[in-house]
Image 1: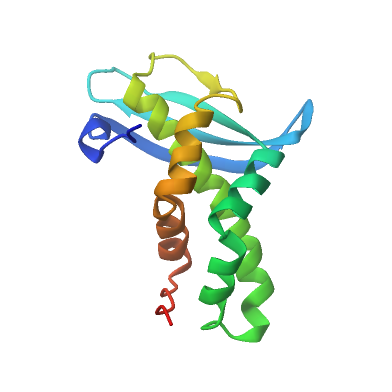
Image 2: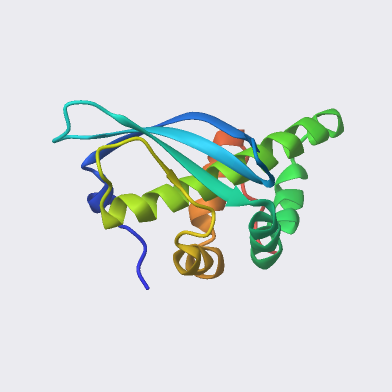
Length: 152
């Protein structure tokens, strides 16, 4: 199983638009929306990526996200812990949705507004969670401007 290489994604310009937010008729799902423009397209499209809260919880558990985050928070003042933790949770969802979108881009995306269902690309996402969790954690660490704790 391969994840998309950065060269495959160079044909696209992706901009995070908004999210995560609740999905209107699916309280067990959240959604992030991205603007996507391919070099050969005249205009961009909006791509919504849905994810089930249960899948997010499983991903957090499988990759040890809470333990990883606790290690990062050691360098954060106590008064900022709750805010950083809330922001990290949102960033985790955004990173997860970004990985989903990257798989879709690697497979090719039609030039139309669309929604990627929560069930899409489950095997590919599980591979990222198990084998390349830094695809998620690096984004979060950089956005929070926190340094990784050295291994002990």
